[in-house]
Length: 69
Image (tube, rainbow, N blue to C red; front, side, top):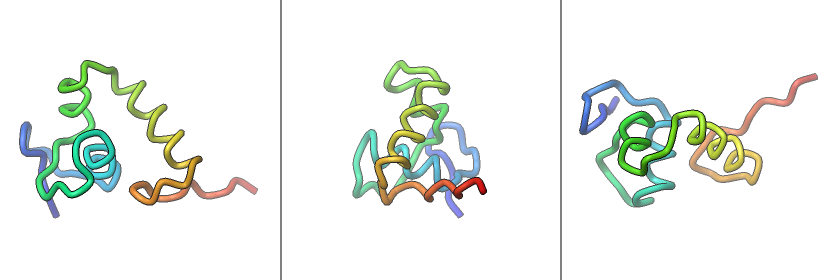
């Protein structure tokens, strides 16, 4: 279990994946999506749109979306 190095929130795989994608794939400390967005001056909505695009493109940093039957 890891925590945001800025706000100390418990991180999800989306937080760590987004940080790695935006900052450094080899990072060992991470910031949550909210704090990463502040750093890059983007909205959380924009971040989630990017994450969905990365998932669709098959990026290994994010779990694949389950198919809706």
